[in-house]
Picture 1: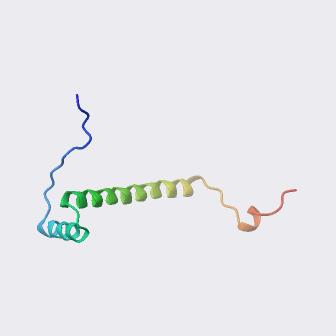
Picture 2: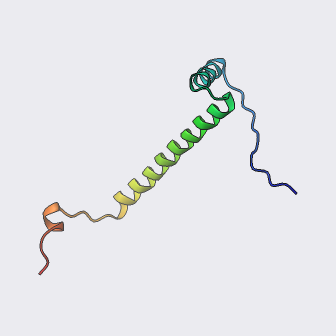
Picture 3: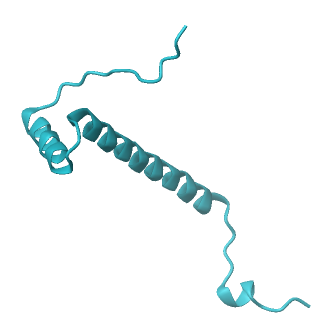
Length: 77
């Protein structure tokens, strides 16, 4: 049995979105599907960055004890 490496998805896009995608694909001399996939991947990375930032902020504010620069770098006895 062959392993599936790709799954085809169909999307319905408003005309302005399709026009923009076609324009970008033409500009970069790549197929429409390749440009669409690139942009979806980029959007997913941005979403991931945003969510990881939210997690970091919540941890930072919830449990972090802050030290001044002076106290953090003072010599130990």
